Length: 278
Image (tube, rainbow, N blue to C red; front, side, top):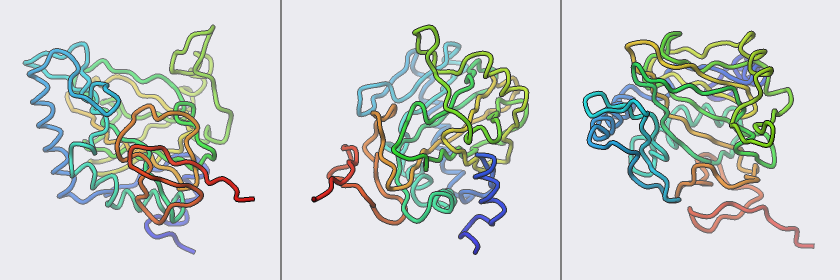
């Protein structure tokens, strides 16, 4: 049996290694529109010296690196871009990327949250080793993050670094000596880095990543940007066990198939498991 977009070899590789890079996840026209929209936000950010905009939980939508200047803008994150851009919403909900996620999770797929993480040239942003599932636990582990490469991702511009197969191992604490650090301890991080692989690809490629997979990324030391549009999905029957770290008005929408084992009243409410009738 062959899946719709992925070969059986690709499907097996994802579940064995915990990640998979697939090219041409969106059309060139959609990718160009996304890049143009993001470039407009970068230019807009030059007019600000502090994070700005507002999400539905009253947090800044646009986050800036400390090195941000009007003559050298350093926009490093856009929270919930699908709320303010039709092209990003389309990429999340109606692209080949969405079909690839459906191949992995089954016919019924639910959206959780999205963001843009950008490392513009010379930026200092470093992401320490962690697992996403500890930030967004669900009632089952059918949770996939899709990282769409809006730029060419090379070894020099801060690519995603992953530890293959680590999604099959334990979940590691993000708390150390009573302090929440958002990262695993140094011993685990060093072991992961010694056996890690880089997720590289051309613009329009996507890295599909299991939410339990250990991953990190270094700073961009090149002259080229590295911008990722990140969307998190789950199987429709996977229910969030904690509040969404990035609330958005589309949380819980079904992007493929139908809702299962859950009820949903408005786009602002979390889906809840159906209670037994007897």
